[in-house]
Length: 132
Image (cartoon, rainbow, N blue to C red; front, side, top):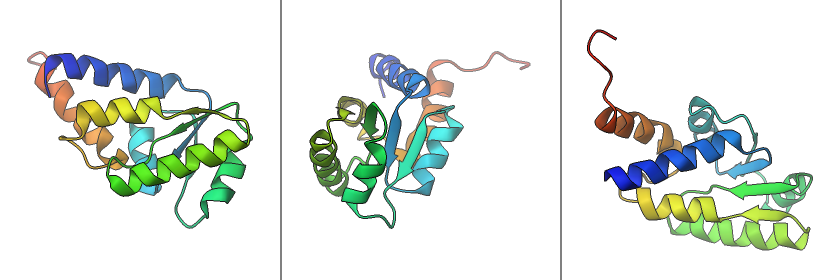
């Protein structure tokens, strides 16, 4: 990852930390990765629930961010979820996922890898001072 993309990546992480709606992810590892990054928003996992039910649960929030994995399956899930959520009148953020995919797809496969990528690139671009 280049420095320019790292700065964009850091901005995404900051956005996730400040997000006050609900975030939809595929599973428990995705949630764990986001929690390690300091995300405090409500996280709704897709695992074991039908998409319409997930959308209904998420529709209780003013804004919903879809963070499915960056592969083809994740893309299809994101598209379907956005359709359901927009039907409920939700404000849906798919842009964060799209931007993350643009800058980090070569580095990660899914949301569960975000925390490890964050650690790797943070050390690469901002190594700790000696003695710390």
